[in-house]
Image (cartoon, rainbow, N blue to C red):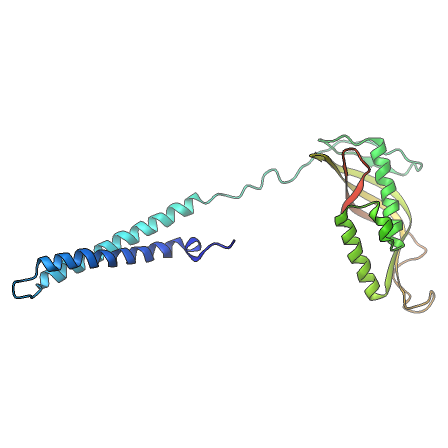
Amino acid sequence: MQPSFIQRNPLLAGLAAGLAGSWIGHMLFGATDSSARTTEAGETTSKTDEGSGSTGIFLILMLLGAGAFYYFLRMRRLPTPDFSGITRSSTFNGNLPSGSSSTILSTATVDTEITSDDKKAFQQLLTDVQTAWSKQDLTGLRRFVTPEMLSYFATALAEQTSLDIANHVEDVTLLRAEVREAWTEGAAQYATIDLFWSARDYTVSLTKQQGEPGYLIEGSEEIPAETHEVWTFMRYQNGKWLLSAIQQ
């Protein structure tokens, strides 16, 4: 809900209230005093007018001062934003067992222990997600990602379909993975990991035949390229891990 004009402009509101109050005071007290000083002939003395005008000005000055003081107090009481505790940090190392000696996983966690089975699951998810993505297989992706990530992939694949292009990520090989953090929120566990891998990552036109000019839009079908992304995984009650976020 948006604040009202009075809430957004307390000083103007105080000034308006002061003017209104002085006008009412002048109408009540000025009129009474004027009636009391009316002569028997029905004429009002000039001293009454001067006294009434002086009283009105004095009331206006008092109310203006009160309004300014109120505004000053409100400004002093505004809370200062507190940005502490937003980020978490942790460091210590571990290894990811794998068939390839070049695959190393450094673990950094405080709240939740990441086991060797968890690390193997992260490595497998990298391959499974990229394979389903290359096949434009949303049904397959549904088994590996959260609903939010499935919506992200669906939107990206729809954009490719609209442009008549397709992105392929093939022969994925995990080179290194560094677990930044792992934590628990209620029944859900999370792990954020820096992933470094190599793959043949290329984009082609669906309106061209292989070998025709304009078929290969980006990347190389033959030469692998190295990629680094930050992936966050989550699971419920020690269930299977799912991809929940990607930061490129």
